[in-house]
Length: 359
Image (cartoon, rainbow, N blue to C red):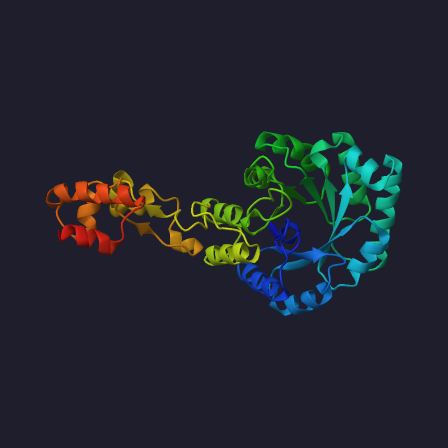
């Protein structure tokens, strides 16, 4: 269901240079989570064959794949790497076909036939054909390309919103004809240029797509793609599907942030340090009665932890609870706590609260 491409798309992000040790640590965590497929890199990447050989005994139920352009020499190189699956990118829009490849529509069909035929001759058992920039392609031509790939032996069609133009309603409309007229499973590759990637990936899966590409923290070209931690958590905790082990998600995101030299926002969905933190009186009071009142799931399910603090937004119940007092006994202390938190510009530590109580 989820194709993780942190090691391919994620490494393509501006300034990202994963060391081999980092690639292995990321792969170990991703494979332990039980991702359906791990896209390990692009054909031509130095050390890719050795990496696949290292990953093979660790893969478990996860398929290992590589990506290559729609060229005979590249699919030949991909076939010799030892991956379970080969993902071939095919420009579907007129702009990409003309400006990148200099091909007519007929020429692209001939190229596709030659590449898929060569892959078949080389014994590639699972060839996924990705329609690049499909959101700007002629819909009938894109469907014809997919149908041709199906008849030539492709195992999957992957639809790429290359510059992140779609919204969820657009994604549903895009999928309908492919789902109706193809026998093959569909995958989607959703970019995040307008902040829609995770929503589009989830929409595609709920509308009938079999796979969605994801990467840790959504790492990828420009604004990246659908975030693994968000889509996996939604599938596992809202839809009860996917069979993923989510307990390592927070640690994996921290590793990815460190490897990419990016700050991990404290309010980052699923993985941020403060997404299970509360200070305001209403929320702290509610969490004390039942965490489900203000949390969509137990933070432990994704490797996180709950954090409660008192500060400028806290009420009597929160302050009293922090000190083990009855609410009426904390009336004056609330004023002191709020004033001190405003002065510091943050919630107070336990020690600071106890020091105020001792005044």
